[in-house]
Image (cartoon, rainbow over all chains, first blue to last red; front, side, top):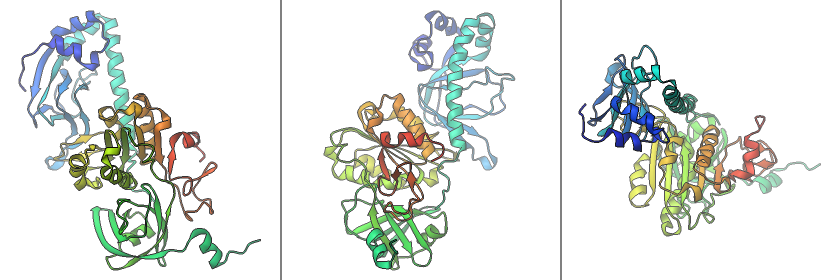
Length: 158
Length: 279
């Protein structure tokens, strides 16, 4: 992982996740963010590691994967630019449940989960704003996962 | 009472015509495309009843170009007695053909407009004639986006044609799979996640959808979120079709017969029946 130059403030302002997010909250989050980039094929995080961040993806795609035997991970979802990656920072015990690997050269902002947790402990309005947004992302992904579980393209019958 | 005789049954439903198989190509582990001698004109989206002597008959969509009447393509997934018998046939053998039956994709209504095609799995087969038609008449259509979902990368149908559809056909082809193992650098996720990425103007495009009904329901909802009018949505439905001529009633959907009034319907004509759990 390398850090890139660029304005975190600008990236936060333009990212869909923070659309209509109150300016005062966005400003208070600035100190938690840092620009990041990952080379194609680079690991963003690994299952079992401490989940200290979440990522706002601005460029490139990231595969969410389940490690499997034989070194061939199973990809279960692609996170695209404009999306967020990771919510384990929010939920104890703050451990990544999946692997994430850059499919392209990726740029974005890493938001420090420990910094965020400190802020939401004392500002419940901010906590509510953030939770609303994460809940929407989680609900979308849960719905999509349910459809994937249906195996709708599986073998039919005559 | 009218007693069914061979003659009057044939006059109602037609008799299978033997068609020689010119070649058989394997598309995926369980899907094959049979190239038969041409049987005349057909519309994109129509189907034939294919008959294997002594085994049975099944409805199979036509998957070739409507502009090429010297050959008839059928893409078949082996899932049961008849389809496994069909996919076991070899070049030089014959299969019985009745048809073509049913309605077609709205190629005339889509002229001059953007087109968004959403499909999954083997649902791409009945849409390939529409894609070929668009490519052969490219100036008649605006932006065209094909959004295709498959179970896994190796189960993607016609993947070897995607580059030519993009380059020669000027069609935007976006694909995704439900899961992938190993070195797959394409997208993973449900087909509806492709809708926001389509370059076609969805709010004014004609949409053609073919896939499992669960997929169709979520796709219609996804298109509606992009302000598409349901009047512009067409769906191909699948039911247990036996006669192909709306006489046996096996494929009844409310007051409609999928084999004759469909398989391609304007969505608003069947939306009510989509919501009925009993049908």
